[in-house]
Length: 97
Image (tube, rainbow, N blue to C red; front, side, top):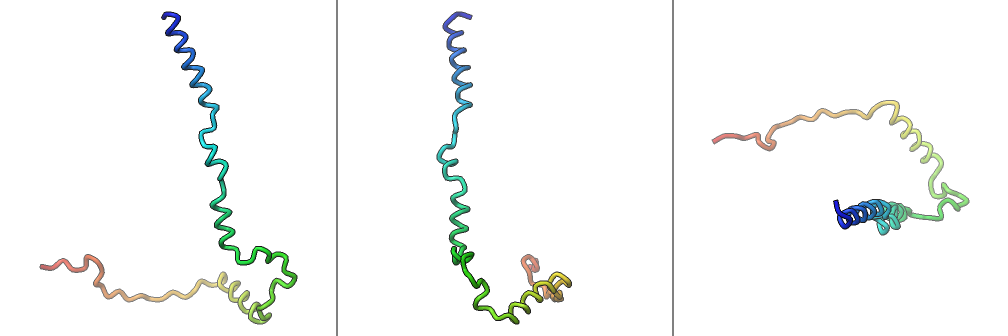
């Protein structure tokens, strides 16, 4: 192998090694997580709700108690199931001539 081919091979090897050190997605990395943060901000009704001195204002005590009890009871027994009567007539139920 002559000297020119050796220099070209050495240069190509060095350039390939340096290419592995380059950050390929600087734009994507700088905006990582923005979509999640935007979605959370859009779903927050009151960002200052944690500063509210009376967080349960507007809900009656008995109504709140009943709703919590119904929530806990939903884990004790599964909801009732219903029998569905299939009358046919679905897709591909025909087939006649």
